[in-house]
Image 1: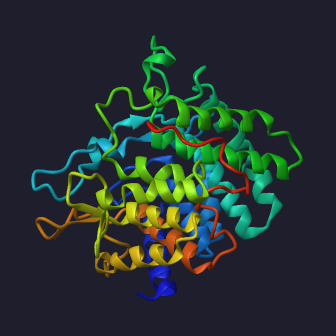
Image 2 (image 1 turned 120 degrees about the vertical axis):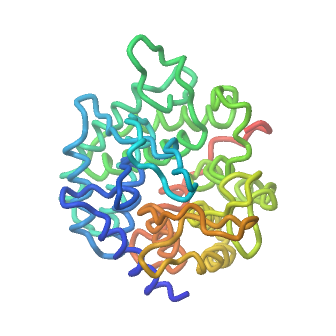
Length: 359
């Protein structure tokens, strides 16, 4: 698989999906959320389409609420059609998600790392600061951040916190702090909030995923502590190695969940970036090579492969699947100046303390 040609192939698909107003939905038919939109903008920037990336961040400015939230839709809850092949996009429900809101910070920092243009920070810093204000208003006294906005009459304690979402916010706060520092402003509040999230992730597993019996079967909960930089070095290697055989199907990629024979391109690409964060570049490149059969000549990559039924499933080619693959290839081949931004910590600091056995 030729890396540069594949990157171009995926970027062309994202550009095809991007709307005139700058929005990048999951599919031509719809579903929009700010996290996957930002991931796609990052992929465009990494490919050299800086104006298209800026247009995507401009769109976030137009939808940001007064409280800083970036509203979207809950694509994860969208049902499949009667043939179990396509997402019923009209069924997507509105959602205000803290992680979705926070992720713009990493996207803006990534853009700046590529463009080197201080005006990009000056233009989008207000977007990031206001978004982080919303996010931190949902941090509990224990450190974790609720996954969504509270409904009328609902307390913060009644809203669950998600481990993967908090890992992502942990990294987004680091990016937001770097933006502030680059502009000569204090970031002490952001770094303190990040420290508290990290401590909760390590020492208070009871504060996460309380409405689930368990989420240990989700690949993202496995690799995100490494991808976000919470775990580093030998600790991160041991963490990934411990469950390698639960999630990786040799020759195919990373399963989305352990109990389903469904390997997905996005999870495989993210796992590859987590591996790069700990210096496992060869293993990362091997994983990405396994995804080659899922490249679609019509544009992008298929979402995943159901190995028991031997079918591509579902019959969708999301923008964010193509985006994750671009970012992973960039990380492996060190193509853009921001090739390491998605991989682990953004600063050479050590983790807080050894992760608890339950974490």
